[in-house]
Length: 363
Figure 1 (cartoon, rainbow, N blue to C red):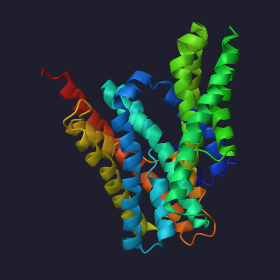
Figure 2 (cartoon, rainbow, N blue to C red):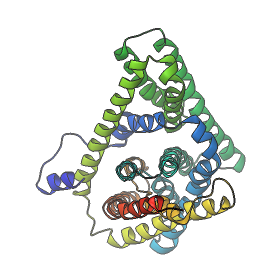
Figure 3 (cartoon, helix red, strand yellow):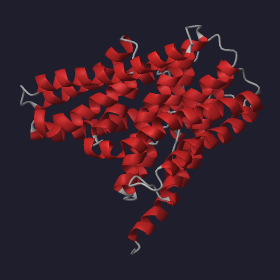
Figure 4 (cartoon, one colour):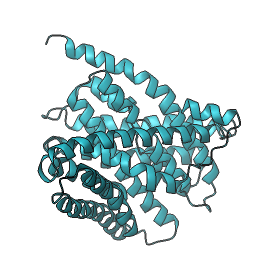
């Protein structure tokens, strides 16, 4: 990201433009698919009440807190405020998860961070779509919204499972690892694109496809060599996609008139942190006396490690052109992403080291 900002300030103009289409159709599917490959079904089933609670209820609480604050403190209309609250609720803790691996953080903490963030992305994208439909003048009754939510979420999951299952059945007839990798790539991109064409959640479709391939395909439908090669391929694909998107984000950051939006950006950063706190602390407190309890240090890591990234910016850039706050919304979104990466991302290791030290101490 620093390299992207530097190139922009030096006057280098990349021919690749950061657009919602680029992020959604090229960059996002491999990021989601690769992360979902490593989500074990047994772990997900055990942690699902907590993960889904933070991802869905927490995302809604976070969006409402941010929306109410931007409306009251910045003076944005409810449409722009709700849209901003929905898009900025999407977390992208890729760098934090990488740091967790380096610091040898606990397996459960890594799973909670990764699982919550992936499902959270789907929840935020669905919420953004519902708010966009309301802005466009579509029926916004409680029944209509509930039905649209069920169709978007359920349809996305079913679409991802159907596409991945069909391709895994084909992969089972081949012993060529290159064919197997190609079919998993079709599963990642195909599930996303088919879901978007059917107007259901592409993010959740790719999530479902990745989990199915990771849990059923590897070691079952895929050969042993093909399964190992697939993991290495997707590790590299996700690394490449992350490097590209943050380079482009940095380049776009260098072009943003941050001084113009300094006041709303500062308020937005504080509100986003407050919204993230509402998404983590109350939800984890509900499980404090259960087997899913999370200690206070890990709660702080889940809160401070909720970075914003590619999906939030893709949704911001996809905001309706007619929205009065569109330019300000985009500028504030870029400021929030910059703060989360440079401030939160660079200080999370301090919490991770402390968690590692506590883990190493005898009980």
